[in-house]
Length: 85
Image (cartoon, rainbow, N blue to C red; front, side, top):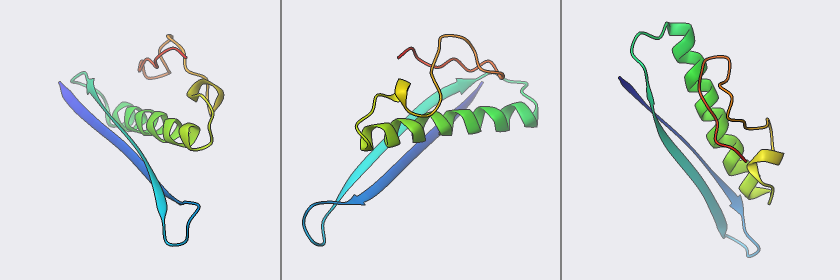
């Protein structure tokens, strides 16, 4: 079994001069052994996409289901399931 950690953070200017606000999310998922390099790369991309879209959704005051792609209980093309909205 492989473990994949994906994280994304973003710092944006806040209302006052020389101040900022940080947003951060990270997730750890377990991946099955035996994935091909292409499957592994796709899982990494999908997981990072999920984390990045979640941070951007929080930053813009949107729910993750309404930002970027829609999450579903159905597996993606590589079998990774996304949580329901």
